[in-house]
Image (cartoon, rainbow, N blue to C red; front, side, top):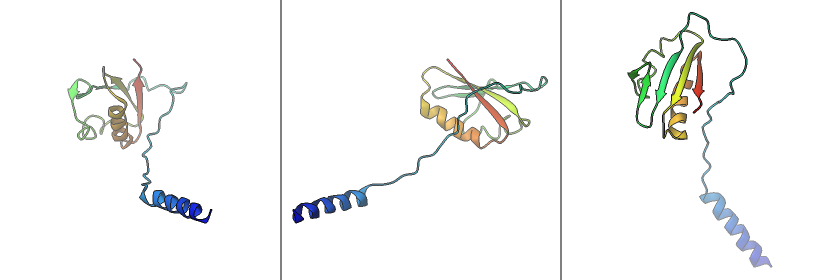
Length: 113
């Protein structure tokens, strides 16, 4: 019985020391609900997300240059509508949302298909 406890302890110790504990990143999502609408004179920005393309108001941008585009100069509380192209996977959308999280005071709405 003693040798079995020793073997179990050694296995437990081995698996605890060889496993890695990684911290997962979080992306905050909130459901759309009733609330104050956008001001009447402010036009929403439109972002088209494709599998290998990204267009902001009809102009090609990349994930690296999106902060320096019209989104960087957007007024406080500006609305950004994100349209997903066919074949866009969840990782591509998550990458975009992580970049957009760095832009303060931007209201992002992902359009459903």
